[in-house]
Length: 369
Image 1 (cartoon, rainbow, N blue to C red):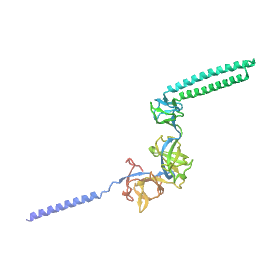
Image 2 (cartoon, helix red, strand yellow):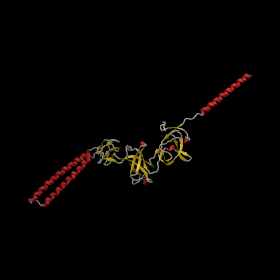
Image 3 (cartoon, helix red, strand yellow):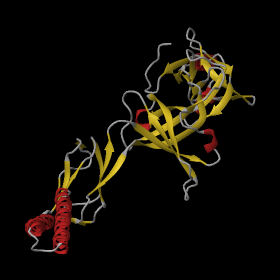
Image 4 (cartoon, helix red, strand yellow):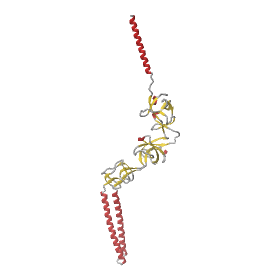
């Protein structure tokens, strides 16, 4: 019995040792340091002194013409499509010219008859003038022939003017571009009967490009022609162009109660016609301001702060900041960070002061600080 008891005690002791070893192994694994978490980082962007007011608008050519025929008729053919770039004098569409050519021929025949009547009146006046010198006719008869000659000459002038009008109308059957530009809209198609002056195509002239925005009536007093602006295309965010306010509508729209404002775009690579653009108006705000994403702000005891990354240790530290204004693109900071510093722009509420991170960019690529 003693040997069996001894064996049992050895077995229990071995099990106890193995359990302690297992517990020790688990404790060792739990104490292993965690890998630094990845964090999205970026530089604060300079705000360029942009005013808090941002307006969205559409890109237009400064001069846009509604082109139409000067005469009524049926469209024979359309020669251009939307988006076509045309030169000055280029044909855009044609009307059926048959009726107008007949009118011109009729006017030509009328002129021929009027000239014949004038020539006859001239011969009669000359004959009566010669008879007057021989005292075969009276002065009254000569005056009558003189008046008839004047009437015949007036009829010739009238017929010549009518022929000129008919000839011009026959030429008006071809609609031509009055300036070089781009066709932005087609309003009529082949076979359609149109009246004189009815819009057939819209031509956006080459040259100046503008952005048209709508300003509410309570802010229009702050705008005046010549005011500088900064323009940014929605399709090419980050590419900013200089602009100047050219025109302020003197009357508000009766439906929206907003005023139309046009801002001229200058510089290379202007936005394309019809695109959406943002217009920022320059301000004289003192001091440098930085633009950061709204997701970069951290609430530190009710005060705004951002996590700044130490480029040597890659540890994050809170830096109090002063918020100047909130924008559509982010938050304007009046101080607290510099554009050369790296800040965390996402997941700020999961960080701790002094915690190391693995910095990555928006495409999840490692960033070398």
